[in-house]
Image 1 (cartoon, rainbow, N blue to C red):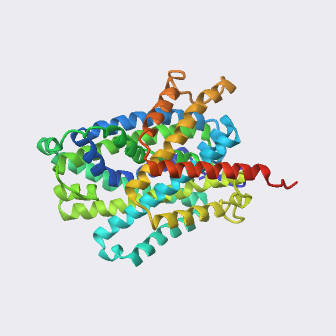
Image 2: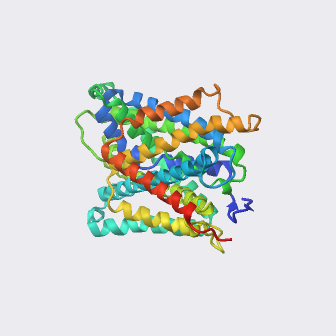
Image 3: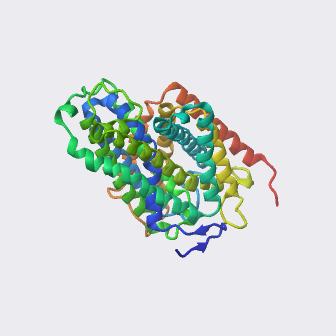
Length: 430
């Protein structure tokens, strides 16, 4: 693969299929492995409709991201979009909230990995092995990504294919074992559960913005970013919907499990099916980590580059030309939070944080259009209707925020404000 070095010192090595794989890899992670049972408990037989509603809402937001991302060749994703559209203060708020979103998602997914490992290897359930597995999960991928963006992209691409294989087997075989009676055995949706269920599904559908963080390492962000977002999220939507249908059509109501896909596979493939999905789940989460370890450190790199974080976050490794300090910082903080994470709560917190950053990006669409109405980039159809729908979708779901989620979000906003004040009041080096 041909590469070029950007003005930041990073290497432009990511092509459109690398970015598409990054989108799929950062979205298909822990969420779809843990949520089918939770969502079915809330929505019952109507659960697939919940997926369609979530996919439609996310689709509107993805269209906005496709237009905005095509205009940037700078690392940072939503942080950069907000900074350029609304100024440094809002940009920094979005940067911190995005950081909260990614770290809380890492905590949820790491614990899901250990949970599935414990299902096929009992020693993993011990506290000592739990610590060792999570440490290895973060340390190995941090080392791979420090050695080079191409190594990180290759790991992400390989794990994307590896994670899709067992899921496609699950869908391809399971669809022949669907039973209408089993599907109908699930009760109707619980009263007042729809918005909460869709909020949780935002966790499963979210994360595509992570693929936009390394824009300065893309070979042609203007064309490739929109293609990757739309293609990748189309793949994700089809896979998610079919997984939910197979689960509900093969697992009868009354079943209680924290490993829904493995449980469903055992119903139509026996014990080998349970093993296949347990191993596939671990590969899926590992692949998610490979993608997020490639993308998320570029956020703190961008914050450091602009003086919104300490400058050492923008350090580039002399030999490997990667943001090694930001990679180590993300891996270390993610590791610490993963050791005390709770899947469902972390998923809700991550979804709430995503909605705020997604709403701001939707709001940036009309701002950039007014500044450069003739820009030769991907344009969202239907004028300003799509951005307005995206903002409205985010605001409606934010009403489902719990008290603890609100407190943590408020603390993050306060911390971002203090960081903004620090960056403006500290002495400037000539």
